[in-house]
View 1 (cartoon, rainbow, N blue to C red):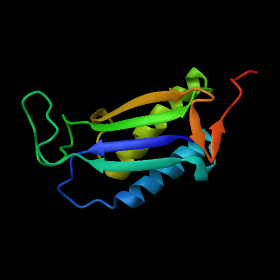
View 2 (view 1 turned 180 degrees about the vertical axis):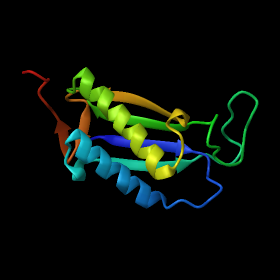
View 3 (view 1 turned 30 degrees about the horizontal axis):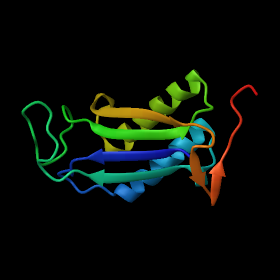
Length: 131
């Protein structure tokens, strides 16, 4: 179920976003030990000039100052160590494949509770860790 949603300004150089997303999914799958077919990712662009930090609203994604916005959605059964690892793996993978500094990546992790997800044609339930 992990869903990775990325938003940024367009880049000056053309990036192969579909290739980057596949690399990120594979990195996440391998390091977190989640089957690859369960890892989803999307990338959306803000319109040029539609992302401001302070009084700066660039047309293209800079290497610093305007972070990539990343939302990670996972089930709520992972322990704190796994949650930290997911954030670190995702940041490292994006930095590597997009070729930007990790300090210019902002990741927000949301957790979905059992019974609060509709997936594969039904409401999904899972057991809490340690149960």
